[in-house]
Length: 295
Image (tube, rainbow, N blue to C red; front, side):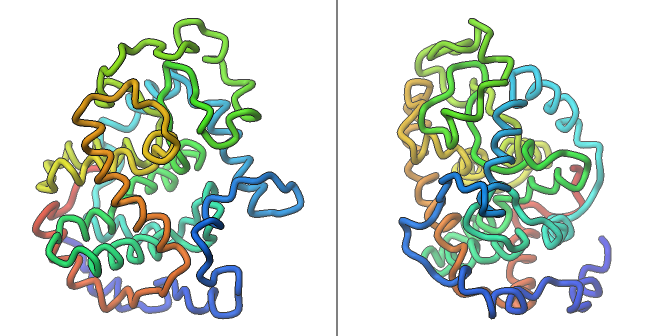
């Protein structure tokens, strides 16, 4: 294992969010109603960045594209790293699909994990799930465009639900729109076939789920559900796609929603002291998914 301690001691290499947040009132705590604001304003650089990311996503995420990305990434032969080493790659990533924050994803990882830890102190697997839920975004460092890494996910191979963000304006150029196999309510699927049988748009959720399975994680199944579907907002928050779900999926949705409140509503709250938390979370990594892993 590489000398992680030495890496962590280089304080200036770790993003200090206080330097950015202190003078910026837009990062202060805000009402829940102000989260996930996808209104269009071409004069607002952040809103326009988000809209353009989704436009590219909804144009290019097709059945064929997803099949190609799975073939590319699910060999897990791109690089090797520990969980903590991969996590700190996110120090250099700002999610271009997120309308709520404009800070590196590593900060959000510790925010989420610490809020879960405060409210579920006995569920250490849940703490670790919060820490690594976005770790699949490392794809963005290996020539994957952000529209194929970040943002809300949705099924491909069937009609797009109205609850998908920018649904009315962003799918016009998607080739699957014109394929009768894919543009009906059920498309290539059967009613209540189960989400395990549904092909989701390609991104960090599906990749991280597959990565954890491939590397034989000891995290419980409910944690894998949270990771695989936490960005599937049209389902867990938009009320769509239950007709593709099994009874197990619908039962698991309660846990995905429980996770979601920590994922979303920690984005503008008190920032944790990341360096002081590393030993605790390294212990959880050693327990549930230790060592150098294949990515």
